[in-house]
Length: 212
Ligand SMILES: *[C@@H]1O[C@H](CO)[C@@H](O)[C@H](O)[C@H]1NC(C)=O
Ligand SMILES: *[C@@H]1O[C@H](CO)[C@@H](O)[C@H](O)[C@H]1NC(C)=O
Ligand SMILES: *[C@@H]1O[C@H](CO)[C@@H](O)[C@H](O)[C@H]1NC(C)=O
Ligand SMILES: *[C@@H]1O[C@H](CO)[C@@H](O)[C@H](O)[C@H]1NC(C)=O
Ligand SMILES: *[C@@H]1O[C@H](CO)[C@@H](O)[C@H](O)[C@H]1NC(C)=O
Ligand SMILES: *[C@@H]1O[C@H](CO)[C@@H](O)[C@H](O)[C@H]1NC(C)=O
Ligand SMILES: *[C@@H]1O[C@H](CO)[C@@H](O)[C@H](O)[C@H]1NC(C)=O
Ligand SMILES: *[C@@H]1O[C@H](CO)[C@@H](O)[C@H](O)[C@H]1NC(C)=O
Image: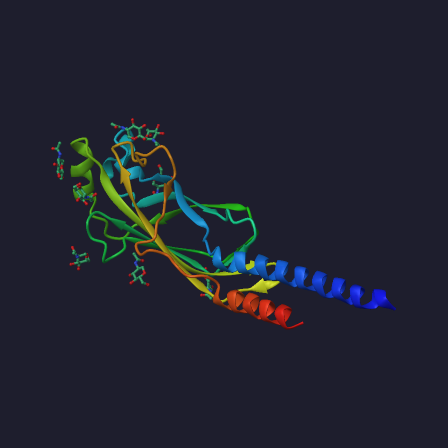
């Protein structure tokens, strides 16, 4: 039948359209490599709270924090490995005054998670911190976060990507962070890169679709 050739052309064309559509989707996902956003929503150092006179003994080493993990990515779920938090006080960023581990978990696309907790500081330079807040300036804390992430894209699990971010947090004599807004933890080095394995997969799909 004369319609056969036309039908097979139509089939081939639609095959091509579908494969290149799928390739384009994967290509877009592969190149659109982004990461979840981490921020400190709340930060409280009771010992620096001037109004709390029960703190007179200066023996309370607690630091309260509220960490927000925001997977704003529409197309990727995130597997977090254990998340390490390190806390520094003052100019010494070589030796943390406290550590905390948030157990790893899975976060679906578009989801947010909060982790509120408290750590006990070891050997913080409280005297310097008091000096800073008592003259109306701020005491500076640094929070560092590091973990490894795997992304789930449709059925795909990517390899692990490092996430290393941090921020300085200014605390005044209320014991609270000065900024009313959440403080975003940022990466020190510029972040580049894409999901190479998915990029190669989509290039493979394009090649196959061109051959058929
Ligand atoms: C500081 O201490 C006072 C007195 O204990 C308390 O009322 C206040 O809530 C504390 N501030 C914060 C930010 O918790
Ligand atoms: C330190 O102070 C806070 C707030 O008053 C309190 O919740 C916490 O239990 C205290 N920590 C210690 C170790 O006493
Ligand atoms: C993650 O942390 C938990 C304790 O919070 C620990 O038992 C576990 O071994 C850690 N997992 C890895 C892979 O380090
Ligand atoms: C940071 O603190 C540690 C331990 O207290 C000390 O050995 C080190 O010399 C300090 N480093 C700086 C740069 O102050
Ligand atoms: C935090 O962890 C680091 C590395 O594991 C360790 O060297 C340091 O002593 C810990 N600091 C505190 C205060 O637990
Ligand atoms: C407050 O003290 C800090 C150091 O403790 C100093 O750097 C700053 O200049 C002082 N500010 C005022 C207003 O005295
Ligand atoms: C005190 O303030 C100075 C100047 O802003 C800063 O360099 C230092 O890290 C602060 N110290 C503490 C313990 O916050
Ligand atoms: C300290 O910071 C808190 C939170 O931003 C704010 O409400 C308070 O007015 C500040 N206190 C001073 C003395 O600036």
